[in-house]
Amino acid sequence: MSKIKKIGVLTSGGDAPGMNAAIRAVVRAAIYNKLEVVGIMQGYEGLINGEIKKMKSHDVSNIIQRGGTILCSARSEEFRTVEGRKKAHEQMIANKIDALVVIGGDGTFSGARVFTQEYDIPVVGIPGTIDNDLFGTDYTIGYDTAINTVTEAVDKIRDTASAHNRLFFIEVMGRDAGFIALRSGIATGAEAILIPERETHTQELQTYLEKEYKEHKTSGIVIVAEGDKSGGAYTIAQEIGKDHPEYDIRVSILGHMQRGGSPSAFDRVTASTLGVAAVDALLDDQKSIMVGLVHGEVSHVSFNKAIKNKKKVKDSLLILNDILSI
Ligand SMILES: Nc1ncnc2c1ncn2[C@@H]1O[C@H](COP(=O)(O)OP(=O)(O)OP(=O)(O)O)[C@@H](O)[C@H]1O
Ligand SMILES: O=P(O)(O)OC[C@H]1O[C@](O)(CO)[C@@H](O)[C@@H]1O
Ligand SMILES: [Mg+2]
Image 1 (cartoon, rainbow, N blue to C red):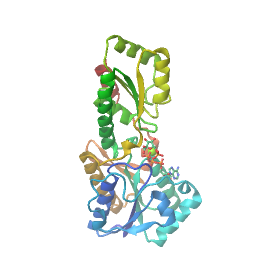
Image 2: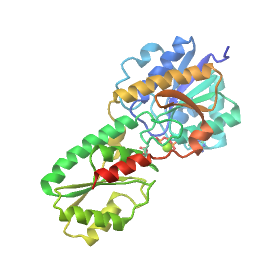
Image 3: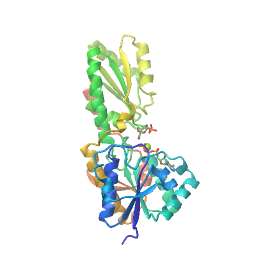
Image 4: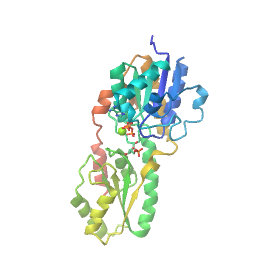
């Protein structure tokens, strides 16, 4: 029988569509299991400052479809310090919080890992980031919605690109990872996809675009992941344009619109599944782990592995795009 009576839930790092669905699932699963549950505002920042409120079932009504996070999020510099984490621990004692569910990305789990090493508190993580850059889960909450958002935006850009016979370099999010770029690139029939996981050979891209141009293609879309080593969409566009003044080039940075919007059904179901799984894991006396989804089944992976192991982009998807963009 677990000793946990009260759990706290927080969202941290960049927000992601589906975080609210995950909060709802954690709150309801906790109540279902007769636990008390509190919401911690502004991620670790709110834990340090004691911005904590009791959550009842109706507090999470009507949020499953909403983007953002009702608990708000933050990137807390103070939590990176020993003193900051000491304050956070004092708040947990003062508020009688026995365990935490943290919803966020690799940084959030790095923070949780050091916190549990210092204070031996049960913490379970739920992967919530549009970047999908976490090892140990096939999908992170928010990724599916983000690629759908990008797909919709690129389709619109394709219309105007075709009308004007233009070449567009479109930069998408993914701090150090190309998952958003790769999947949305395939979904939009992009002519090329530049991601940090694969070296960009500018000369190869030049040759490819020259061939396309000669064949009178009416538009060109190059998807560039923000973390790509080529230096981003503006840099690569400038480089290509220097050698080819005849190209009519435009650059579009999609930016934070990729983080917003109502979560897709897929993200809502993933968030609901993982929210319940996180509470189950705590009741099962697990700590320092992330719950994830592998081949559609709930998986448990240590924070260590989730952070340290690098999730690989699927080679098969890269090959697919090479085949389809001839
Ligand atoms: N090494 C660390 N030690 C302590 N706290 C950390 C550490 N790394 C990250 N954190 C905490 O976790 C917060 C969230 O991390 P980060 O900003 O990297 O976002 P994330 O969780 O990776 O999400 P995303 O990448 O989707 O924005 C940081 O602002 C900080 O408070
Ligand atoms: O919220 P900020 O600081 O603008 O962060 C942007 C970063 O967050 C992410 O959107 C992930 O949440 C990355 O793709 C991007 O690099
Ligand atoms: Mg991250």
